[in-house]
Amino acid sequence: MRDELAPLLGPDGVLEHPAQRRTYAADGLAALREVPPLVLLPSSTEEAAACVRACRRHGVPFVPRGAGSGLSGGAMPHPDGVLIGVARLRRILDVDLANGRMTVEPGVTNREISAAVEGHDRYYAPDPSSQIVCTIGGNVAENSGGVHCLKYGFTTNHVLALELITAEGEVEWLGAPTADSVGYDLRGLIVGSEGTLGLVTKVVVRLLRTPESVRTLVADFTTPRDAGDAVTAITASGIVPAGLEMLDHLAIQACEEDTGVGLNRDAGAVLLVELDGPEAEVDREFEAVQACCREAGATAITIARDAADRARIWKGRKAAFAAMGRLAPDYFVQDGVIPRTALGDVLERIADLSSEAGYRVANVFHAGDGNLHPLVLYDGTRPGEAEEAEKVAARIVELCVDAGGSITGEHGVGADKACSMPAMFGEEDLAVFERVRRALDPDGLANPDKVLPTPRLCGESPGPYRPHPLEEAGLAERL
Image (spheres, rainbow, N blue to C red):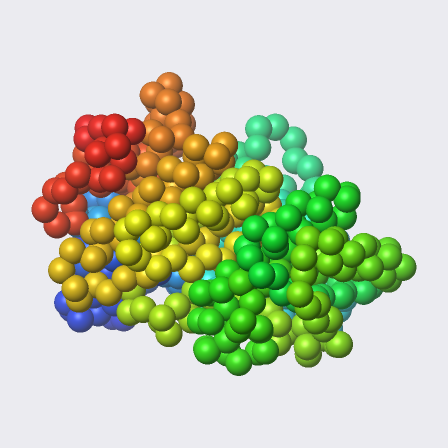
């Protein structure tokens, strides 16, 4: 396969040297690693389709990869397959300001989309914390959200159409460059499928008009429960903030140490609230939000003075994951979802788990939509710590499901949580998922062993088998 693709992709489009391949061994979940046997780097849809067709002819699995910033092991290579990187497909193909849309290749970063129309009163709403590096192809795969997903939704709400290379190597357009398309929503089926249904090579995204007014505040609280009460009060009032984020005390320490943006190190939790829209409406609701925070016990409220001040505040929040390196050399990040009203109870249960296990847990949340990002801190150089920290992370997932929530909100299932799927879905549900997958990928070559539980993933690789925490709890079986 290498010999037939090398002339097409060029000398630097087929990576065989061990040092080059090792670069692609993991995504943002570095605890799961697998050096790919071969890496292919196409520069066009035609080249990418040729790679997929070659994989099908030879019966070789393929794993799509964007920037590698995902946090669920979704881009972890297959030991018997090839990795197809799309980082070289990074052109902005069309900007249609009149109709509020843009067509891009999957290697374009999230931030580059808004930057391309910054002077034209338009922007792209989904904004993951990694937006300066994560690509739109990865955002489509994971159905990424970001700090403004409470009001504006996730990637699926902002992708109008996409070009897909099916697992059989055919190039198809799904969706339409309009708000509504006729027929089955196959576009929606692909968004969030984590590369298991094919390879996306073009995306038509929706551009929104820049809001007339934006106002942002930071409220300090003594405890996360108090901050959670403020979240409940704000949403119960009917106000839908553009962003409603929370950091607990440990997360504040890390972010402030890393960025020095001025968060209160003494606070037990801080709430970041941003409103946008018509100026009169924003001013009225901004006063109501402050009242909700005070009634919930806010000890201080700091209001951003201007756009630069807002950017400073969000810099602190978006640095949260990277800042954890200030506290520990390694961490597991979870991505569970709970009902907003359960926020205080679940946080207390996470604190109890942390105390019992002896591992610190920093909490960062999209509090407005109940999406938690607990970070379990550990030192991987100490024998047994990685395994124990992983158990704590898995138990946090169980807490979210027990509270009526989900095992993931925006980071995806990937390899990390595939074995946790039975905690949330029954056998019939999983069977339906598998039937859909096989309908589009009969040979099971597109990103195999991801999302759905498989024998290899749930215990046999990487490394020697050890029981998953969900197995030990009786919530899953080794197939």
